[in-house]
Length: 196
Image (tube, rainbow, N blue to C red):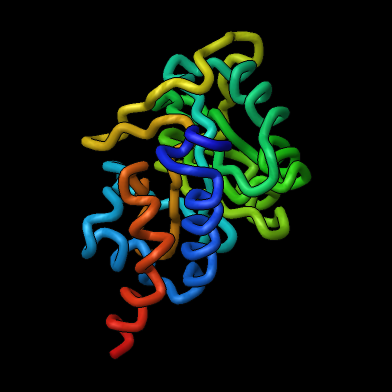
């Protein structure tokens, strides 16, 4: 992990621990943005499932519906990571079976800049959160291959592999690598100031 998150392994671990301490309060993304430590992922997220979550990103570009790459990425997820997928506008790119597999691997959640299906199954995965742009019953092409571990442009934000992604009731944001040390050192104080 050293260097992969724009700082030391210790700083990255402290930043993720700090965000997870405050996830359940519901306004963590607001606090992070107020202090310039995060930027919103520029898409509305009307579909929300499971708890708030935070983790380092694994990205997949599957805008043409390349489902094989999403399946491969899910199979490689590590404990606590967040899958970020850019999918098509007309077919679902993520659903219940992929969410179950990701949850079994210990993934924290998924940000689907696209459509999802099998939502009852998706919502039932214990401890796994997800947000998406919408729902669609038709699935994407199971054999087509997209691009993994690449930068994704979501609205005005660019999500890069290993960016720290935080999702709560307000929004989905990325913590810029340069801000990890500030989040690790100051987030508890920012939260205390908010409560005061």
